[in-house]
Each structure stands twice: as C-alpha cells, then as structure tokens.
View 1 (cartoon, protein in one colour):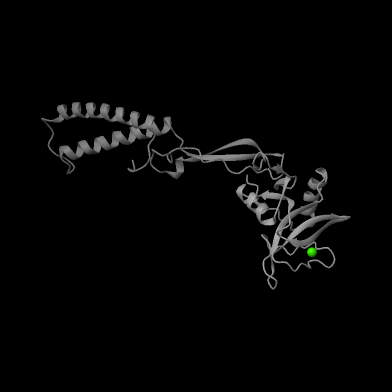
View 2 (spheres, rainbow, N blue to C red):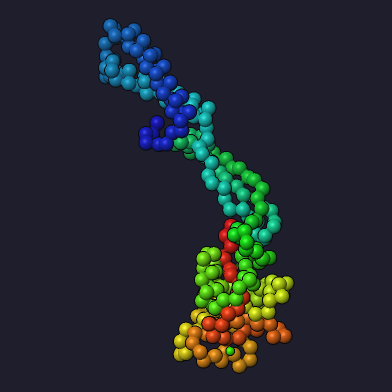
Length: 253
Ligand SMILES: [Ca+2]
C-alpha cells in the first residue's frame, strides 16, 4: 500500500480491524515457531515473519479493494445544452479497481466508470433581472430618472453596468423591452470625458448607431442616449441630464 493517500473513514475502520486480527494471528504463528527451525534461504525468523505479514496484508488489501473498488466521483461536467430552455446531458467519472484511493495503482485492473444525467441550460440572473432570449441579464430602471453617472452607479451596485449595445441584434432586444414598457429614451453605455478624447465603451465592438450629425455635444462629459425617433438611434447628451436606464449583468451558468 502506498502511504500518504487519503482514506475514507469506513475503510480506515475496516483496515484497523484487519490489522488487529492479523496481529493476533501473527502472534500465534510467532508462538508456534519460536522454538524451532534454523534460518534457511538466508532469512532469519524476523525477516520471514515480516514477509508473511506483508503478503497477508497485500491479500487483505486486495480483498478490500474488491469490496470497495471505486474512488470518489468527479464534479459534474458542464451541461452540454447550449440554448436557454433546452435540455442536454452532463457526465461525471470515477476511477475504479486498483486505482481507487486505497489500492495499489495497477492500470491493467482499473477502469473508469461514467455517470450521466439530464440537465437544463439555465444561465443565472438575479431575481429582478430578466433573462433575454440571447442570454443577456437585463433590468430596465423606469422608476426614477438619473444622471448617467448615478445610473451607472446603481448598475454597478447590482454587479452590472449600463447596457452595452454592440450590435443591431442586441439593440433590437433592448428596443423590444423599452417598447413593451412605453419608454422611448434611456442612458446606455458610452461616455466621452474630454472634448479632445475618444468615446469610451465597455466593449471593443465598432458598432455605432449615431443619428445624423451626432455626436455634436460640446458640454463635457457627453453620454449616450438611446432614443426612439421613428427608429431607435443614438444621441449624445450631457451626462448630467436625467433619463431612465437599463442595467446589464453578464449571465453565468
Ligand atoms: Ca447631441
């Protein structure tokens, strides 16, 4: 047996009892052999006893290994379903045979057991955030209008940020929510902090949806207002203006 491995409690007890029994047996053998047999094959009495003990211990361990052949299960792998609301499967494995935690490593007599179960794809959102079809966690704040910075602060306290609109499809998701709530302008991510500086965004996407002649603001800092003007477009506006806003938290599984 390799020492220093982790043994679980029932096995330790079993092993402990086994040692006690073997010690009793060996002391009997010891009594029987005390008075006779000179050393043959170059080993003295003590060495033979040690050999015997080791052999018996080895057999006991093998028996225990067969009674308790498998190690601990691994953690479950990620669910292989990829779309919200769909089902998939997930697996876990464990090593069995002489590769279990107790037993001597022997790849010829070990095997891997696989367990499988049904799972549902379920990204996590805080309870008051809505999970969109494309797996964004969003919340429209339409109770109190705030400056861009204060809106960002509220989002940040939720563990999120002002919603980042980096594509037409993302914009359509946001627009649908706004229209369902009869809100026609909100703060979104994007700020220009100095007159000769660049616009700063959370993401690296090149997507922009400025209305014609925008941005044109001269009061610094300027922030981005998503506004429904026939269609949904971006206007720059002084960040000190107050609008409703939408917060976004990265969904996790
Ligand atoms: Ca403007």
